[in-house]
Amino acid sequence: MHTNLDNIEKLLNKYLEAKTTLQEEALLKDYFTGDKVAPHLQEYKYMFQYFKASKKESFTPNIRLETKTRKRKWMGIAASFAILASVFIFNKYQSNQATQKAFADTQNALQLIANQMNKGNNAIGQLNTFNETKYKIFK
Amino acid sequence: MTQQAFLNTVMPFKDKVFRLAKRLLISHDEAEDATQELYLKLWKNKNRLAGYKNVESYAMTMIKNYCLDRLKSKQAGNLSLVHSNYKDTNSNLQKQIELQDSIQKIHQFINQLPEQQRMVIQLRDIEDYEFDEIEKMLQMKATAVRVALSRARKTIREKLKKQHAYQLG
Figure: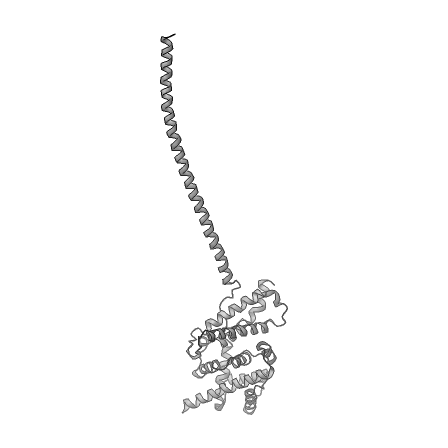
Protein backbone atom coordinates (compact mmCIF):
# COMPACT_ATOMS: atom_id res chain seq x y z
CA MET A 1 0.00 0.00 0.00
CA HIS A 2 1.39 3.35 -1.05
CA THR A 3 1.35 5.75 1.87
CA ASN A 4 3.40 8.88 1.39
CA LEU A 5 3.74 11.55 4.00
CA ASP A 6 1.27 13.90 2.29
CA ASN A 7 -1.35 11.25 2.33
CA ILE A 8 -0.68 10.45 5.98
CA GLU A 9 -1.01 14.08 6.98
CA LYS A 10 -4.29 14.40 5.11
CA LEU A 11 -5.60 11.29 6.80
CA LEU A 12 -4.49 12.63 10.18
CA ASN A 13 -6.57 15.76 9.69
CA LYS A 14 -9.58 13.65 8.83
CA TYR A 15 -8.76 11.41 11.78
CA LEU A 16 -8.83 14.30 14.23
CA GLU A 17 -12.25 15.31 12.91
CA ALA A 18 -13.44 11.70 13.34
CA LYS A 19 -14.12 11.45 9.61
CA THR A 20 -11.81 8.61 8.67
CA THR A 21 -13.15 5.16 7.80
CA LEU A 22 -11.89 2.00 9.47
CA GLN A 23 -9.84 1.26 6.32
CA GLU A 24 -8.17 4.65 6.48
CA GLU A 25 -7.51 4.22 10.17
CA ALA A 26 -5.92 0.87 9.41
CA LEU A 27 -3.49 2.68 7.09
CA LEU A 28 -2.62 5.11 9.86
CA LYS A 29 -2.13 2.27 12.32
CA ASP A 30 0.19 0.50 9.92
CA TYR A 31 2.24 3.59 9.31
CA PHE A 32 2.58 4.64 12.93
CA THR A 33 3.37 1.23 14.34
CA GLY A 34 6.16 0.84 11.79
CA ASP A 35 9.62 2.30 12.25
CA LYS A 36 9.65 5.00 9.61
CA VAL A 37 7.58 7.63 11.39
CA ALA A 38 8.35 11.25 10.52
CA PRO A 39 9.86 12.99 13.58
CA HIS A 40 7.26 15.77 13.63
CA LEU A 41 4.49 13.18 13.95
CA GLN A 42 5.98 11.35 16.93
CA GLU A 43 2.97 11.91 19.19
CA TYR A 44 0.81 9.86 16.84
CA LYS A 45 3.27 7.04 17.03
CA TYR A 46 2.71 6.80 20.76
CA MET A 47 -1.05 6.98 20.33
CA PHE A 48 -1.30 4.22 17.77
CA GLN A 49 1.14 2.03 19.62
CA TYR A 50 -0.93 2.46 22.72
CA PHE A 51 -4.11 1.51 20.85
CA LYS A 52 -2.48 -1.57 19.42
CA ALA A 53 -1.07 -2.69 22.75
CA SER A 54 -4.36 -2.09 24.55
CA LYS A 55 -6.15 -4.50 22.29
CA LYS A 56 -3.95 -7.30 23.61
CA GLU A 57 -5.26 -7.14 27.14
CA SER A 58 -7.50 -10.08 27.89
CA PHE A 59 -9.91 -11.34 30.49
CA THR A 60 -8.09 -14.27 32.06
CA PRO A 61 -10.27 -15.66 34.90
CA ASN A 62 -12.65 -18.53 34.23
CA ILE A 63 -16.20 -17.42 33.80
CA ARG A 64 -18.49 -18.66 36.57
CA LEU A 65 -22.04 -19.35 35.53
CA GLU A 66 -23.28 -20.16 39.03
CA THR A 67 -24.16 -17.30 41.30
CA LYS A 68 -22.47 -16.85 44.61
CA THR A 69 -25.73 -15.55 45.98
CA ARG A 70 -27.58 -18.67 44.95
CA LYS A 71 -24.94 -20.76 46.67
CA ARG A 72 -25.30 -18.61 49.76
CA LYS A 73 -29.03 -19.05 49.71
CA TRP A 74 -28.63 -22.82 49.59
CA MET A 75 -26.07 -22.63 52.31
CA GLY A 76 -28.57 -20.70 54.43
CA ILE A 77 -31.26 -23.26 53.83
CA ALA A 78 -28.84 -26.07 54.63
CA ALA A 79 -27.75 -24.31 57.79
CA SER A 80 -31.31 -23.81 59.02
CA PHE A 81 -32.03 -27.47 58.32
CA ALA A 82 -28.97 -28.45 60.29
CA ILE A 83 -30.10 -26.33 63.24
CA LEU A 84 -33.63 -27.73 63.10
CA ALA A 85 -32.33 -31.26 62.87
CA SER A 86 -29.93 -30.79 65.76
CA VAL A 87 -32.67 -29.31 67.95
CA PHE A 88 -34.93 -32.22 67.06
CA ILE A 89 -32.27 -34.83 67.70
CA PHE A 90 -31.25 -33.18 70.95
CA ASN A 91 -34.84 -33.10 72.12
CA LYS A 92 -35.30 -36.70 71.20
CA TYR A 93 -32.09 -37.63 72.96
CA GLN A 94 -33.15 -35.73 76.04
CA SER A 95 -36.59 -37.34 76.14
CA ASN A 96 -34.90 -40.65 75.50
CA GLN A 97 -32.71 -40.06 78.51
CA ALA A 98 -35.77 -39.13 80.57
CA THR A 99 -37.52 -42.34 79.53
CA GLN A 100 -34.48 -44.34 80.43
CA LYS A 101 -34.34 -42.68 83.81
CA ALA A 102 -38.05 -43.30 84.39
CA PHE A 103 -37.58 -46.90 83.33
CA ALA A 104 -34.68 -47.33 85.75
CA ASP A 105 -36.71 -45.71 88.53
CA THR A 106 -39.70 -47.94 87.84
CA GLN A 107 -37.41 -50.93 87.74
CA ASN A 108 -36.00 -49.95 91.11
CA ALA A 109 -39.44 -49.41 92.53
CA LEU A 110 -40.66 -52.76 91.23
CA GLN A 111 -37.56 -54.43 92.58
CA LEU A 112 -38.25 -52.88 95.96
CA ILE A 113 -41.87 -54.05 95.88
CA ALA A 114 -40.78 -57.51 94.78
CA ASN A 115 -38.28 -57.69 97.61
CA GLN A 116 -40.97 -56.70 100.06
CA MET A 117 -43.34 -59.22 98.48
CA ASN A 118 -40.69 -61.91 98.83
CA LYS A 119 -40.29 -61.04 102.48
CA GLY A 120 -44.07 -61.37 102.81
CA ASN A 121 -43.97 -64.68 100.95
CA ASN A 122 -41.35 -65.95 103.34
CA ALA A 123 -43.60 -65.03 106.20
CA ILE A 124 -46.52 -66.82 104.55
CA GLY A 125 -44.27 -69.86 104.06
CA GLN A 126 -43.47 -69.82 107.75
CA LEU A 127 -47.17 -69.59 108.49
CA ASN A 128 -47.88 -72.56 106.23
CA THR A 129 -45.27 -74.64 108.00
CA PHE A 130 -46.85 -73.60 111.25
CA ASN A 131 -50.29 -74.66 110.05
CA GLU A 132 -49.03 -78.00 108.76
CA THR A 133 -47.30 -78.74 112.04
CA LYS A 134 -50.45 -77.65 113.86
CA TYR A 135 -52.63 -80.10 111.85
CA LYS A 136 -50.10 -82.85 112.52
CA ILE A 137 -50.49 -82.29 116.22
CA PHE A 138 -54.16 -81.46 116.36
CA LYS A 139 -56.00 -83.74 114.02
CA MET B 1 -29.60 -23.05 24.90
CA THR B 2 -27.02 -25.48 26.27
CA GLN B 3 -24.07 -24.26 28.27
CA GLN B 4 -21.74 -25.05 25.40
CA ALA B 5 -23.83 -23.18 22.86
CA PHE B 6 -24.01 -20.26 25.26
CA LEU B 7 -20.25 -20.17 25.77
CA ASN B 8 -19.67 -20.38 22.02
CA THR B 9 -21.86 -17.33 21.57
CA VAL B 10 -20.51 -15.15 24.34
CA MET B 11 -16.87 -16.10 24.79
CA PRO B 12 -15.51 -14.50 21.60
CA PHE B 13 -16.13 -10.99 22.92
CA LYS B 14 -15.21 -11.43 26.58
CA ASP B 15 -11.98 -9.45 26.17
CA LYS B 16 -13.77 -6.54 24.53
CA VAL B 17 -16.33 -6.46 27.31
CA PHE B 18 -13.58 -6.55 29.89
CA ARG B 19 -11.58 -3.80 28.22
CA LEU B 20 -14.58 -1.49 28.02
CA ALA B 21 -15.32 -2.18 31.68
CA LYS B 22 -11.75 -1.38 32.58
CA ARG B 23 -11.79 1.80 30.52
CA LEU B 24 -14.73 2.98 32.59
CA LEU B 25 -13.94 1.59 36.03
CA ILE B 26 -10.14 1.97 35.66
CA SER B 27 -9.50 -0.67 38.30
CA HIS B 28 -8.49 -4.04 36.91
CA ASP B 29 -10.21 -6.02 39.67
CA GLU B 30 -13.46 -4.12 39.40
CA ALA B 31 -13.47 -4.60 35.65
CA GLU B 32 -13.05 -8.34 36.16
CA ASP B 33 -15.93 -8.39 38.63
CA ALA B 34 -18.12 -6.42 36.26
CA THR B 35 -17.34 -8.77 33.39
CA GLN B 36 -18.15 -11.77 35.55
CA GLU B 37 -21.37 -10.11 36.61
CA LEU B 38 -22.34 -9.48 33.00
CA TYR B 39 -21.80 -13.10 32.04
CA LEU B 40 -24.02 -14.24 34.89
CA LYS B 41 -26.76 -11.92 33.68
CA LEU B 42 -26.40 -13.17 30.12
CA TRP B 43 -26.52 -16.76 31.34
CA LYS B 44 -29.71 -16.09 33.29
CA ASN B 45 -31.26 -14.59 30.15
CA LYS B 46 -29.81 -17.24 27.86
CA ASN B 47 -33.17 -18.16 26.45
CA ARG B 48 -33.74 -14.63 25.25
CA LEU B 49 -30.31 -14.33 23.62
CA ALA B 50 -31.39 -16.17 20.51
CA GLY B 51 -33.80 -13.32 19.85
CA TYR B 52 -31.02 -10.75 19.62
CA LYS B 53 -29.51 -10.15 16.23
CA ASN B 54 -26.24 -9.04 17.68
CA VAL B 55 -25.45 -10.50 21.09
CA GLU B 56 -22.07 -8.80 21.17
CA SER B 57 -23.60 -5.36 20.72
CA TYR B 58 -26.19 -6.17 23.38
CA ALA B 59 -23.47 -7.30 25.78
CA MET B 60 -21.45 -4.13 25.20
CA THR B 61 -24.49 -1.99 25.97
CA MET B 62 -25.13 -3.99 29.12
CA ILE B 63 -21.58 -3.67 30.41
CA LYS B 64 -21.62 0.04 29.65
CA ASN B 65 -24.82 0.52 31.63
CA TYR B 66 -23.58 -1.63 34.46
CA CYS B 67 -20.28 0.25 34.76
CA LEU B 68 -21.94 3.67 34.57
CA ASP B 69 -24.29 2.59 37.37
CA ARG B 70 -21.33 1.45 39.43
CA LEU B 71 -19.62 4.78 38.92
CA LYS B 72 -22.77 6.65 39.87
CA SER B 73 -23.30 4.70 43.07
CA LYS B 74 -19.66 5.26 43.93
CA GLN B 75 -20.08 8.98 43.57
CA ALA B 76 -23.24 8.83 45.61
CA GLY B 77 -21.30 7.01 48.29
CA ASN B 78 -18.71 9.80 48.26
CA LEU B 79 -16.05 7.43 47.11
CA SER B 80 -14.27 9.75 44.78
CA LEU B 81 -12.33 8.22 41.97
CA VAL B 82 -8.87 9.64 41.71
CA HIS B 83 -7.73 7.98 38.56
CA SER B 84 -4.09 8.81 38.75
CA ASN B 85 -3.85 7.07 42.12
CA TYR B 86 -4.79 3.71 40.76
CA LYS B 87 -1.92 1.34 40.56
CA ASP B 88 -2.35 -0.90 37.60
CA THR B 89 -0.09 -3.62 38.88
CA ASN B 90 -2.24 -6.36 37.43
CA SER B 91 -2.27 -4.96 33.97
CA ASN B 92 -1.32 -7.46 31.31
CA LEU B 93 -0.55 -4.48 29.21
CA GLN B 94 2.39 -3.58 31.33
CA LYS B 95 3.59 -7.12 31.60
CA GLN B 96 3.33 -7.84 27.94
CA ILE B 97 5.20 -4.93 26.59
CA GLU B 98 7.59 -2.50 28.03
CA LEU B 99 5.73 0.60 27.17
CA GLN B 100 7.61 3.80 26.86
CA ASP B 101 6.86 6.65 29.15
CA SER B 102 4.84 8.49 26.54
CA ILE B 103 2.63 5.52 25.87
CA GLN B 104 1.93 5.15 29.57
CA LYS B 105 1.04 8.80 29.65
CA ILE B 106 -1.59 8.16 26.99
CA HIS B 107 -3.21 5.66 29.31
CA GLN B 108 -3.56 8.43 31.88
CA PHE B 109 -4.71 10.98 29.34
CA ILE B 110 -7.47 8.73 28.05
CA ASN B 111 -8.61 7.80 31.52
CA GLN B 112 -8.89 11.47 32.41
CA LEU B 113 -11.37 12.08 29.59
CA PRO B 114 -15.12 12.26 30.26
CA GLU B 115 -16.76 8.81 30.33
CA GLN B 116 -18.47 9.18 26.99
CA GLN B 117 -15.27 10.13 25.18
CA ARG B 118 -13.42 7.32 26.89
CA MET B 119 -15.97 4.80 25.65
CA VAL B 120 -15.97 6.13 22.13
CA ILE B 121 -12.20 6.07 21.80
CA GLN B 122 -12.10 2.59 23.32
CA LEU B 123 -14.65 1.23 20.88
CA ARG B 124 -13.27 2.94 17.81
CA ASP B 125 -9.51 3.29 18.15
CA ILE B 126 -8.86 0.16 20.17
CA GLU B 127 -11.65 -2.23 19.20
CA ASP B 128 -12.16 -0.98 15.62
CA TYR B 129 -15.95 -1.00 15.62
CA GLU B 130 -17.90 0.66 12.82
CA PHE B 131 -19.67 3.89 13.71
CA ASP B 132 -23.15 2.42 13.45
CA GLU B 133 -22.16 -0.35 15.86
CA ILE B 134 -20.84 2.21 18.34
CA GLU B 135 -24.06 4.22 18.06
CA LYS B 136 -26.07 1.14 18.96
CA MET B 137 -23.80 0.03 21.77
CA LEU B 138 -23.65 3.42 23.43
CA GLN B 139 -27.19 4.41 22.49
CA MET B 140 -25.88 7.66 21.02
CA LYS B 141 -26.67 9.65 17.90
CA ALA B 142 -24.25 9.47 14.98
CA THR B 143 -23.14 13.09 15.31
CA ALA B 144 -22.67 12.78 19.05
CA VAL B 145 -20.35 9.81 18.54
CA ARG B 146 -18.25 11.74 16.02
CA VAL B 147 -18.07 14.85 18.15
CA ALA B 148 -17.01 12.87 21.21
CA LEU B 149 -14.43 10.94 19.24
CA SER B 150 -13.00 14.04 17.60
CA ARG B 151 -12.71 15.78 20.96
CA ALA B 152 -11.08 12.78 22.56
CA ARG B 153 -8.51 12.41 19.78
CA LYS B 154 -7.68 16.09 19.78
CA THR B 155 -7.34 16.23 23.55
CA ILE B 156 -4.98 13.28 23.68
CA ARG B 157 -2.87 14.72 20.90
CA GLU B 158 -2.72 18.18 22.52
CA LYS B 159 -1.69 16.72 25.85
CA LEU B 160 0.98 14.63 24.21
CA LYS B 161 2.35 17.64 22.36
CA LYS B 162 2.47 19.65 25.56
CA GLN B 163 4.16 16.81 27.33
CA HIS B 164 6.69 16.53 24.56
CA ALA B 165 7.40 20.28 24.50
CA TYR B 166 7.84 20.20 28.27
CA GLN B 167 10.31 17.35 28.03
CA LEU B 168 12.28 19.13 25.32
CA GLY B 169 12.25 22.49 27.10
